[in-house]
Every structure is written in structure tokens, then in C-alpha cells.
Image (cartoon, rainbow over all chains, first blue to last red; front, side, top):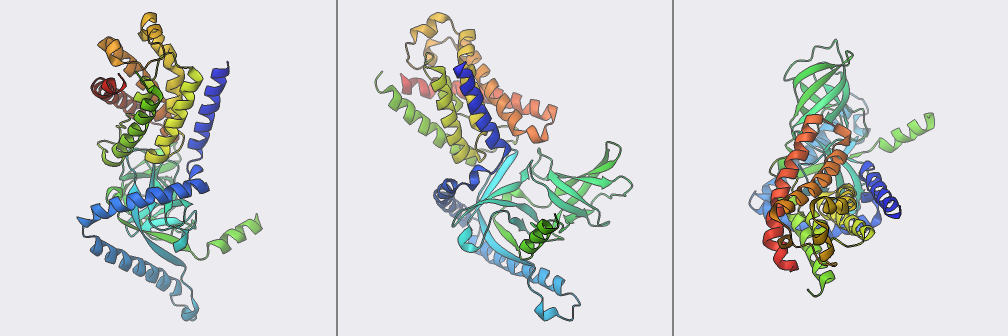
Length: 259
Length: 174
């Protein structure tokens, strides 16, 4: 009986940890551990990068980061007569991927930027080709990112031609396929339509291309489920950008007040 | 055989390092997860206390989860289930004589007939991968895909574990 109780206790602890993916990563001890692991992974990545023109990648990543910020600033300014006073809606922190897991349904990444560089928990991570994930644990110099290739992750996305939006999630089987759900059945979804981030979540900026439509089917006779081929190749992730939404605190405060 | 605990501790550390390297460099097919550390539990002395078995399995699983796999609890849950069922499987596959004659010594592959060793490994790994894959894919369960994943993992890992146990661990633990 005692053995069975121990078995139930250990299994319950394990299942609790699995169900709260990322919960253990938030502990301070994990932060210290990540510092040590990050050091080795970084060295390992540097060796790999040596053969893939690391300096060129670095320069292009920096340029991408600057261009993204500029793009969103220009968009925010629009035709406003107060254009000069408009603040950057999003800031991007360039980071290098030092570890990237694939092949399971709970993938994650470690990036080489942490709290010392302005990264906080629950920030979106993107590239110009799509979303990568959300930061779940941050130490001084490294961050643990829950990958989009994770069955618990969803991104608010819209179909370019119609602006209809719904939750996009990984299909759990293929690294380059996702499913966009809750699209109204009457909508004419065309193959090769581009799917973008909707901007309705505070994690990701709007209009980042995510993928193209490859097919659709009716689910439960009510909604369309749209198959999307992702543009982001997770196998070749090198540099990413952590998104700092400057208006996020204000939005969250407003929501809390109203609720 | 002297220093059994020390040998086991060294074997555990080596298996964790090997698993980290495997997770890092061997990504052949998304369906296939190669796990060599369950071999540690298979090779433990058959007469070892079952509670201790489960605690060792939990600790080893958590180490692998933290250092190699990323989701704490996943490998640990599968390994604890395997450790809990181990005495039943040993009784099912091996004769009472083999178990009792082990006298708290490691279960050496040499002391077991090849077909029984294969059955033992296959059954133990069936429990491990069934728990692992079901828990891993609970949020996105697809029957045929899950079944394929469990089957592929069991077959490939049983072959690997038989090669490893005969070629490496036997000599090391002897």
C-alpha cells in the first residue's frame, strides 16, 4: 500500500509539472542552471556558426531588428499631425538562439539575452518570417522560450485577404504545419493566401507573415479549420527578436480595472 | 563485484551525458525518441526495494528532463511507471530462481536467456514509451500517430537497449 501511495505521489508530481509546462523554469534555481547550460550551449553554437558565416548573420540580424522597429514606428505615425511625438509601439531585442529543441510536442529554445538586456517573462519572440515563441523563464543572461512548436501554444492570426482572425496553433506532428481554427464557414479561403499575426495579443506585433494556406475543412459543421504551411523554418533558427510591447502594461491595467 | 553503488552512480552520470548528446545531435525522425537511460532501471538488482527503485527512477528522470529534454516531469513520470511495474515484469519473464539467485547484484544480461532478455526489455520499454508518448501528446492526441510513435519507439529502443546491455553494460557491471 505504501509503495502504491509513493507511486501515486511521484506520478502526480510529474504530471503536475508536465501540465504546467514552464512552471519549473520560473524558479530561481533553474535560472542559475540555465546560466551554466547556456554558457556551454553558446560555445557549442559559436563553433557551429563559424562554418555558417556568423558575422554576416549577426549584421543582418541587427539590420532586421532596426528595420522592424522603424516599420512599426512609421505605421503608428501614419498621417498623424503629431507624428513627431508618437512613441515606438514595439521595441525589439536581438538575440541569438543557443539551443533549439525539435522532435517532441514540448519544444523550447534558449536565447542569449536575459534580464540584463531588458528581457522579461511573457514576451513574444519573432523573426521576420514568423513567431518563434514566448519567454517563460529569464535569468540574467539567458531566457527560456516556449517554442511555437508546442501543443499548448496559440497565436492570434488573420487571413490576409479577408482579415478574418482566429487562433493558430501547431498541428503537433509536422514542424512546418499549423492549423488556423474558428474561421467562419461561409468565408472563401483560397489556397496560398498568406496568414499574418492579427496584433490582437500583446505578445506579437500585427502583420508578421506566419504562413500560407494549403487547405481547409469544415469542423463540427460550424467553423473552418485551415491548414497553414509555416514560413518559419525552425530547423535553421539562428537569430530572433524579443518583442517589447511598450503599451502592454497600460492595456493589461485597463483590462484589470474593467474586470 | 565491489563498489556496486559507485559503479551505478557512474553509469547513471554517463547515461545522462549520453542522453544529452543524443537529444542534441540525433533527430532522425519526429516520431522516434531514442532513450537509453531506462536501461539503468532495467539493470538494477532485481531484489532492490521497490520504493527505492521508484525514487531512483524519479531522480534519474528529472535529471534527464532538466538537462536534456526540457519539460520536467515527462521522462520522470515514464521512468517511475516503469520502475513500479518492474517486479511484475521480472516475475512474468524470469524464473524465480534467476531472481532469487541475483542476491542484490545487478541483473546481468549474461545470466538471462536471449529471448527472455529481449522480452524483458521490450515489456519494460513498452511501459516507458506508452506513458511518455501519451503524456507528451495528451494535448494533441491523434490515435494513429500516437500508436505509430509508441510502436516505433519500442521497436527501435528495444534493439538499441539489447545491443547496449550485451556489449557495454554487461562488461561494466560484471
